[in-house]
Image (cartoon, rainbow, N blue to C red; front, top):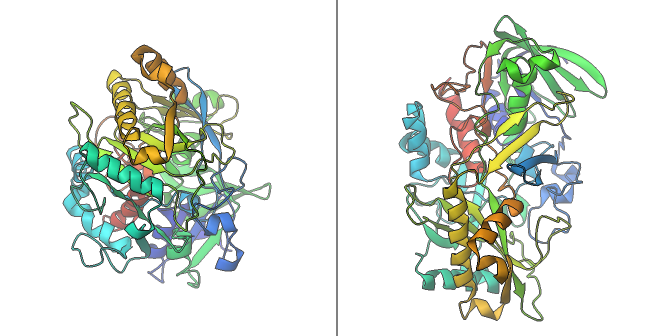
Length: 512
């Protein structure tokens, strides 16, 4: 393999695989795609828990000990417990281990990005790129959906809703929330089935879709089980990468370097290469190259809380080819300036798959869809090559706390609905002694926050003092270096991030 490439892409996830596909369309361009985890070059070789994504898997690939999971740990709240942060360490990245919920942000998310100095990212300008990657099987004739893209999308048909999801839906409608048959219709809100990039139980990862379709191209090289340690600079010009594979170190060189390693690894790689706030890395002997104080800051996520009820006697978990989280409720909290700032994912399974963060019982995942709080990614204090220090800083504002308290009380009412009561008994998590005392509830919340799996924003695009990249993904102050992944979101969108990361990859190519 030549050590000189036209373009090197670091990370084969939801952005990296798409970039590899689109950029390798130019047969004169020699592309190298680097993945830290395993590659599976044909469908037959993919492990079952990576290939399938349905709710019957005993041990999903997102579990802590699975080799396809980076299995980070992060501090949840200030001085709060450390929580599990699963991220994909495998070809396809997190699209190969995630829950496959294909949900767009709301119109206002992208228009806010434009207001932050990214005028090419308004909803009007990004909608064609959502349609480009999408093949929506349920709504193929709608002008806001695509019908020929790589990523197939389908919802659980109403006739296949299990009893708990149906009861939750009816309870929400009776409570006053509108019915929402398509959460990806612009300006939608309310309760309804979520779109999934999963067809007949098979996850539509970017590896199985975008990458599988182009492996035959002679100008595409894929190097797996290779970890990029640092970017090689000549002044402020990125000229290559130092990587490690099978305990050997190599230098490779390229005319163009794209970092698509995700919201945790991308800022870590920049900091380890001398890009960022020097105070974050000079103690490790790393020489400053570009002073960009925003690298690692603005860590955004969707803080999540499990509300759980005791199942009625004799309740059994449904068998399904779909996810056990098939229904979503998006709503706007009281006194909020932002629509759909909350989301609830209904979960009909009582299992926790060995994860102590997840209570047993029938669960609703109550999630803050647009938090005010933000955290930070730091290099590991002892070894900058080791897993980074992650401080999520959830619940750092009263409004974030109050929205969770309101959400618990809404779910308490929904859980008392006659139809829902056929399947659930008492709400056990939190129990009544905590729910009736807001002081106790606030304290309880600080120990129960977990990740919504949507880390983002740590290399934000824009033109403010904390911006790391411009709106084309080019690192400010550097040459030949771009970042394209969830880290460049100025703020986390009000939705699962996978669809927007794919959008970012499709959109950004037309800005180069």
